[in-house]
Image (tube, rainbow, N blue to C red):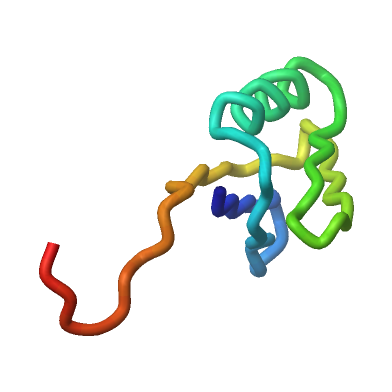
Length: 73
């Protein structure tokens, strides 16, 4: 699952892949917005921590990888 996080007053985005489902990521974001810390783990085992009050936006992408080339589907 691709996740991109925008933090308030920071020009750069945080982008990473995680093994969590979209529902798990959304639940973690909801909990952080309710007054906590957003804590996610990427596919390499690194933890991403963002204070809930600093979240600007979160984009939860698809789990499917985009295809490259001239394949017919």
